Image 1: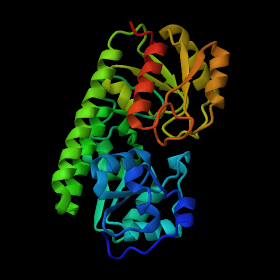
Image 2: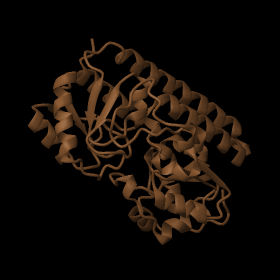
Image 3: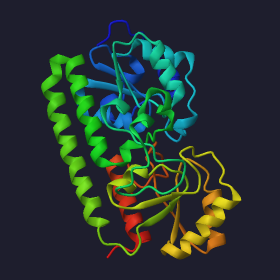
Image 4: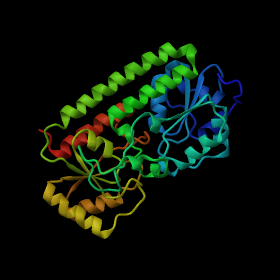
Length: 320
């Protein structure tokens, strides 16, 4: 669609992780077709939205390779060029600083910041997060403090649906020739996300425990939505190491709250989670923050992995 796009050799696209995400983007990403709405997404949850909403009209590529931890992404010169030549960029401000900077420096016409399409909250660096807990003020959402906000909104199907609606409207405005299809695709996606929300609501309503331990604090929105308490070994940053005092605190809490399981994830080391589980005599299991889909993922897309997450939580929390 964008006549300024230059051809990108298939090998270069593959090395950048800009290859196919689904059938709708299979060859166009590599050949540089100009008859589609070209969207560069920052990482998997954004690419999934763009694909679902864009359908056959969108050529979606991702800046983050499958299996790459998105927090660690650095933008190459070639990726900056790809951003410059795209019709739209879809990203989540505050999650990947390198992407925020690159998008800000490009002249791309349509910049869609998912963080601006819903309400982000500050879930702290590893303490309690549960329904009804405020623990933050309006000032916490100021521009100066935006890095303190939790970016993992896609793990709450309700907030993800809010973002989807905003993305759909942005696509309609940017590519009006296909606005009707974008609207229809958005409505279908939102309906499916509402169904997923219902599955979680019903599946986690009656459980023996409401507390779960996880490797890093990615599940604050999910916990808040369904009346659970997340206790993270590390903070929002998956690479941060917990203190000895934090580990001892979690061991004591496991006994007090009937915690059975320490969750880890597929894209970061499970060493700390397994050490805590061994020391506290707990089980381990995967709770996937869905920052990327790989061969280790328990499903092929967002919905399948979220359903797997629900089953893991039901087992760990003793769903009745």
